[in-house]
Image (tube, rainbow, N blue to C red; front, side, top):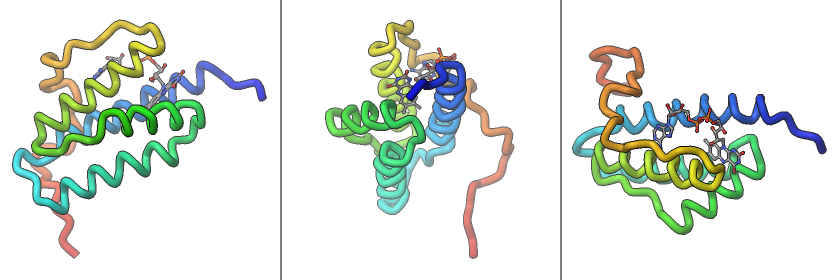
Length: 117
Ligand code: FAD
């Protein structure tokens, strides 16, 4: 089936933005539950990502480089490295992961991201 590269790229940009912003919002000192949730999210993300070829590729990367969840900075660097692996395979320039700070703001201010039910 004929795909559409422009739409696929747009989906990719949106998805990376969500992932990196989640990284920036991850706790400095995550609980076991928070770590497990993030790992589960990434595995499910690789399963459900709408571009099948990308999903397959990302799943293989997760097998090779399992999610790192020790802290916000670990998660952020991990996601940046994973994105760089994809960049590499698409012949895109690599991103300097020391330049992440402040780049992926959620626009949610001091919202502590608590879910009280
Ligand atoms: P993107 O790679 O989408 O990046 C968006 C912006 O993020 C960049 O402009 C830059 O400012 C910033 N950025 C770049 N690198 C990093 C980094 N390492 N860390 C933080 N920020 C960074 N497309 C395919 O054709 N084949 C695939 O197999 C494929 N697999 C994918 C797997 C996943 C999980 C995702 C989310 C996307 C995948 N894509 C794939 C889409 C692809 O990665 C790009 O999103 C798409 O090609 C658009 O690229 P872009 O050059 O606009 O920038």
